Structures are given as C-alpha cells and as structure tokens.
Length: 64
Image (tube, rainbow, N blue to C red; front, side, top):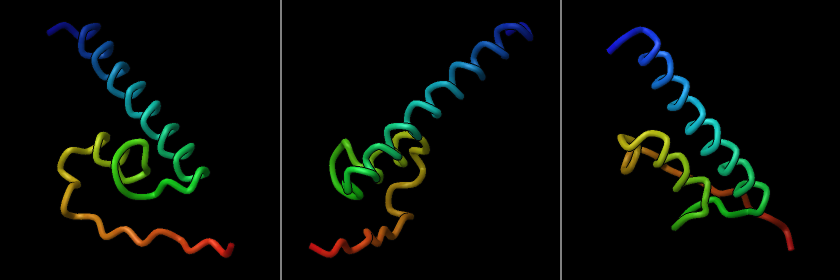
C-alpha cells in the first residue's frame, strides 16, 4: 500500500467515525441513549466493535 493509499484509507476511517459521532450526539439530544439504533449506545458500538459488553450505560433521568 502506498503512502497516498494509507492516507486515503485513514481519512475515510476518520470521516466514518466523525459521522457516527455526529449521529450519536443527535441521538443523545433526542434522549435515545440505549438500545437498537439510532441510539448513543449503538453508535458507540459501531465506532469500536470491541466495546459491546464493556460499557455500563446509565442514561440520565429526565423530569417529566
């Protein structure tokens, strides 16, 4: 793999991670913390496939 190909691959990975983080922030603003996508939990797992089973999520309580 050439240096240009490595740079392109890394940029693509960073762009994908940025998109997932943006979606995770949007899910947080909508109160979707855990469960199936779209949720913060699901997007974090998509960013790092090694996370499932390692996070203990404690969603905030919202007064109604």
